[in-house]
Length: 87
Image (cartoon, rainbow, N blue to C red; front, side, top):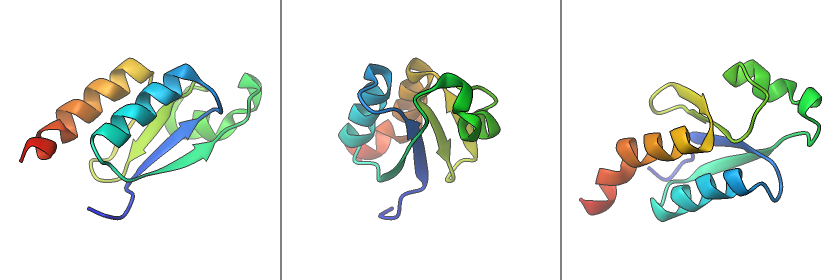
């Protein structure tokens, strides 16, 4: 899986976004970063994909999953991709 199938919507210097980036890197998952508008009210692209304007948010084309909230994303990534690392 060399082509990025995960898109991460994030803000610059956002600790919650960095938490997700750390897990993506730890799991060796290729991903695309889309930096979003700093103003909450302007994050229409995130609202369109996840139904909320909060970041981080991911879209995983592999599984069709779209989600937000860093804790949920970390849990999902570890459950979905964590075992592959050990294989």
